[in-house]
Length: 398
Image (tube, rainbow, N blue to C red; front, top):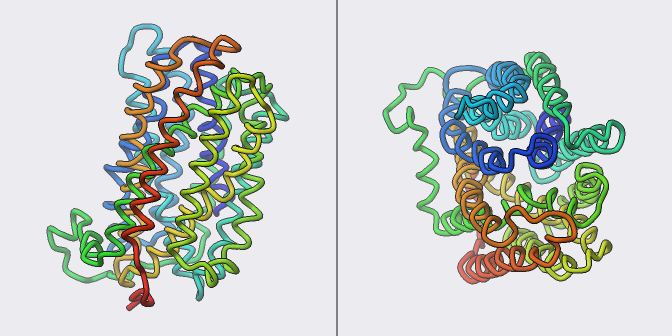
């Protein structure tokens, strides 16, 4: 499940910026490509978490979303051609529709996994690492084997994988809704039960930090492929998948470190590595220092695992058992939704102001002024989190 979930996303997400910029000469589409996902993450996951918690088995919801999402992804290349032919808004509409189907599945796969294991701290990282392997396999296939970064092929592969994942989902362990039969209130219908978790001060600080840190984080996902292409790397996907390879190692040691560092310092180390990554990119940019750029990419294992995976485990432990689907959906809203959407808009404006249409060696001297800003933002958020977050007791799992 995790392999297919992230193979589907990894097949197109890294390279679509290269395809739009180099393959289609559609620079304006970059903002759309990296903003529709956050919009979808805001609109749909909590609502679908409610459905999975109360009305339908999680694996059924997961299968339906992936089937429809895969079909829509196959239509994305067509939508880009329509956009360039004058049918404005087509690309946005089709990619948004796909994202509305895909984004809820991030929380649903976490929920399904955690409800079918006995110890999320020890077992979930071992399951989640297969998602990393899926992303690696997609990047290797698209970037190294097919060398298709600037073509529509990654989206076609992603669409086919999404349909396959949809079919496969119906054969996953039966995961019935834990709150089935309970009367739904307006609060529940809107998925607002998870907001009650914000009464816990430490979870509130965690939620705020999660939202804020995703604003500078989005710069990596949206613009690293463009940056390393300017720096002379042959394939963005074939280079960035080394970050996912490092993720395997750190994913596997999470259970060991979780008991020693605790939630606070696992999250803090993850945020600190985002600061280091952006600093490396900024320093390396003028001379395209390859080892520093690769070093920043290899930090992805700590950056992602220590923050996002630890955050998913922490949320599962804090949430009451009957709203865990909503809680995971709520976390997706904060991170992949609000945080990434604000980041998409802010970083797009920053990119246009600092780099814009410059490309190749002509752009290298401009990239430091771009990377230093998310670096400083991440530093401020880390300071806020370390100062205010003081989790001392065992989370309530009742």
